[in-house]
Length: 314
Image 1 (cartoon, helix red, strand yellow):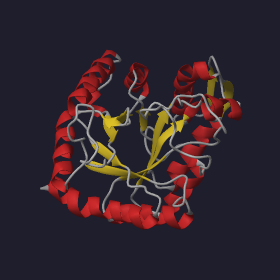
Image 2 (image 1 turned 90 degrees about the horizontal axis):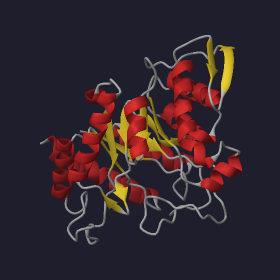
Image 3 (image 1 turned 90 degrees about the vertical axis):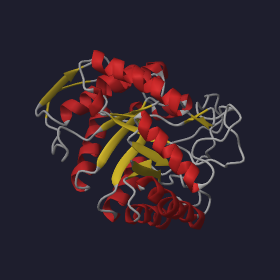
Image 4 (image 1 turned 180 degrees about the vertical axis):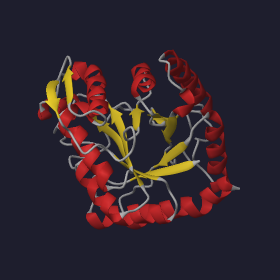
């Protein structure tokens, strides 16, 4: 099992010192990857429903560091840590410029970029950025992925799509990773599973559904569906990376059935959950150690690495 962790993009720990302290400590402790979320602006008021909380209210505020800027700083301060967008909302950015930014970051980081992608949920943010129509965001995402793959492997390149077109352009250098940086598709909807099967190198669902993690049995059902869809596309399901965000919960809060939530309780309980999700087919678990203080965030990270990880290895 591999492990990843989230770096702060907003709040009191989202400073240069805070971000680099967490990134370097995670690398030192042997975690595999660092995750960076993506927001650019926030509306003062929003009617958009956030899909990952019970009340559908977004828990964040109005501040956020920009994803690629943050990734560049972390890339320069680490050597082994994978750099993962979790997830980049593809319709927010021009596809040719985004392809160039990802390729440049991959070259300069020594081939450590993983592109986690999503379609987005905050309609007002789409409108503020002048993005393609919110209702078309799934189709736009699919087209942007096709553009990325072409520009990362072909030069000169031409494209004539529904939403974007260009002719005879060079977009080099290509990424260091071949054929291109891995693409992980976020989300757990039927559309996200179809997108993974068609375009993805990995599936990257958020484990908190209505503020409770997916139980292993439900994960197995999703993975069975993904296997069927991937094989129908003529692709190898076993080549996909399954990377699952698994929140660490307060053990005093019960799950949807009234029992202990997965990834809560004693280190031995969390280790047993990790074994169970590994048996279900998960390759990498992403934990969120962020808190309002850097000291608490580092303490959570260190306790996981020293108290839980050795139990799983055993």
